[in-house]
Image (cartoon, rainbow, N blue to C red; front, side):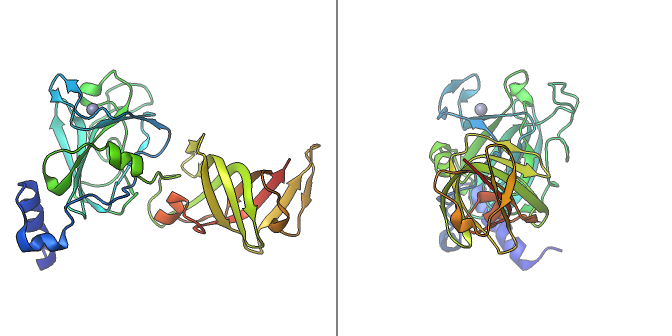
Length: 296
Ligand SMILES: [Zn+2]
């Protein structure tokens, strides 16, 4: 199965890991990560720029992204996943060898079977990892689960995330995380999803609705994001059902979404659709409304 192309990539990758300038080959490999990587964790997170902070093993080589246990860890860019299961300090880890030539480290992935810190899981598919060792993945595809393996045991679950441009020395991930695109949900590309979005109307026309979204709930993953403050423009086909909810709770069907007023409260259920990166990001027009309820 080893094609000429993968061999060439392998050589490029080898040169990159060794920190060698790839010479003429460098023209086809960007030395830097993309300007806007995909934020590597989906869900509520907290992080600071703790790169370089003194730690027992030396200066901190990444940023620690605090998140709920088993939060989806997703690919910062398209690339290839390599498991690393034998580090005492890192615990369950993976390398994402990105198409840009950048290698990303995902460290302290989940090693718990339950939602408690039971340490009964192993560094395996379905526990720490969401894809097979060696898998080629799309940007934003789930590759692992956030946890507290290795020397994060007993500490709040977090993803220790490192960025190694050209496979060389670690650089501060913080600017990349700050510029990163956060996803509304994690799903395998092409698998069905739907969202329930809650917020206020920014603007509405006959076939578009722009909402300042505060809360998103994803199906079937059941992921809820709060305090989003993200402005999302949805397509509104003629088949979409638009309703107004009066203070007594009774519903009236409206003839057009264009009648919606600015700052009205709104709940939107999206049309179930195959997951795409654009939909995961909430790009303009990538989501289609199926049911819209306006109130206030
Ligand atoms: Zn760390």
